[in-house]
Amino acid sequence: MEKYGNLLIAALCCAAISHTLCITSIFKQPREYLSKIHPKIEQLVHCPWCLGHYIVFLYLMIPGIKFFPASDYNLVNFIITWFDIICIMGIIHYVLLRAYEPVAKIGAQRKIDKLKEAKKLD
Figure 1 (cartoon, rainbow, N blue to C red):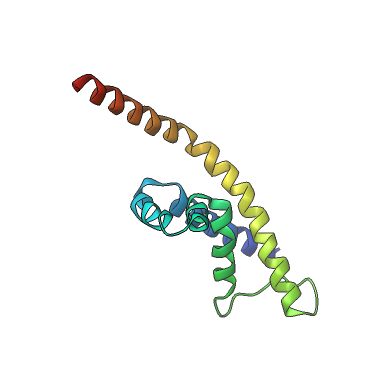
Figure 2 (cartoon, rainbow, N blue to C red):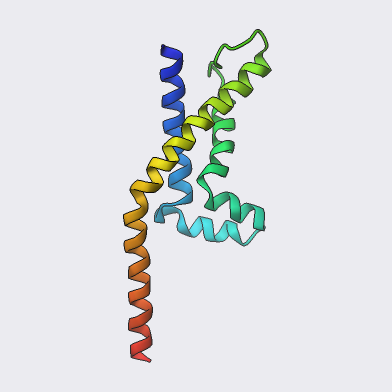
């Protein structure tokens, strides 16, 4: 049972990191800067699902991280653990994006109001 708990904790952490980097306003400037480098990087820094794959990969590279013991081969265990975490992370991303939706709507409405106000001043 501890194995499943570790997968869940890893997925929660990786989902929180990728969501924070891709969605929240605190990393808006780095995202805008990185977006100018290449279209694929722009896609990566704006998609928590895409970035999450790399974050999980980096997480699994940390020495001492144990893989889900599904077979006798470490590479197979690595891949299974990687996609187990990604699957759980996808569900967490869905929940986070639904929870963040009202905040995003308020932010979008603020931008619309600012544009309308600037237009009135002109």
